[in-house]
Image (tube, rainbow, N blue to C red):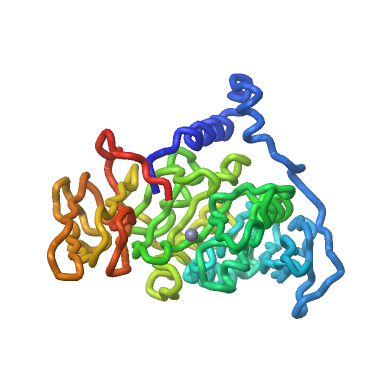
Length: 392
Ligand SMILES: [Zn+2]
């Protein structure tokens, strides 16, 4: 979390202008125009590899228009190869409506330790009845397979000895990239996600070591992003495009409105929080005519707080942490939010909020080295001048 990176902001501004007015293209230079030029044709054909795994057919590209309407389809998408020459397959569920309509894509597992996001998507897909639908909902559940296999955030690579890569800084990827994770992102984005999507929701949770409330990350200047985010009964929204290379920004660069819900904490399954996101996703389907039915609770019912920036409070010392505030608590400038002790029990640091805002993230580990995020505060406005942007 950090404050509006200039490069990403420029790209986002470009895409926003494209979404609002195609005529805006005439005013941009070639270098910028290339940023948003799709790398592959808008529509592609389904390619069945001929393999069947656990009864599911394997595809290496997918066009959901070619699937039989009025039913659900369970497929494996053939991803990048491993060192052994086998492939990382990802699980794809397509609920193909009886009638045409919006194509909405749900993803989870871009980070491998975020289980409530997977459960949210599974639950949504389980509730869909294709015979009653107008449109298509595609779910891709386990995109960073090797990260999920070891319940960790990052993708393990062997390119230069063992290393871990955050896949949610790699999008839109590159099928000919210099790492397996870049190629996996490129294959999934070009051959599965982008060609089949009008609107996209990429489900996440907080990071291991950080407790978070139910909230969204997305750029509310994009009308469909704003509409979708406010259809969820979440208590907080970070109105910001966030980091370069995240999946929702790759979608937006391709002209597809997208945002990131954050379904509570990592690793654990939070069955108190997932219903918020299931209800909101169903609201999105109803709003866009994919499913019949009345809209349920929305952000208004949750008395949503919308913050423009996420201000980190970083530890300045190593030691034992005692946090003095709770998630979703309102804080004011100068308010003490945590203290830190050394092994003798002596207080080595006291931490205060630099801004007005709402506690949107809390370190869950009870110790910390210096330089870690202790709290994120969703803030009404940009942080105090002179504070450095935080790049996760
Ligand atoms: Zn994540």
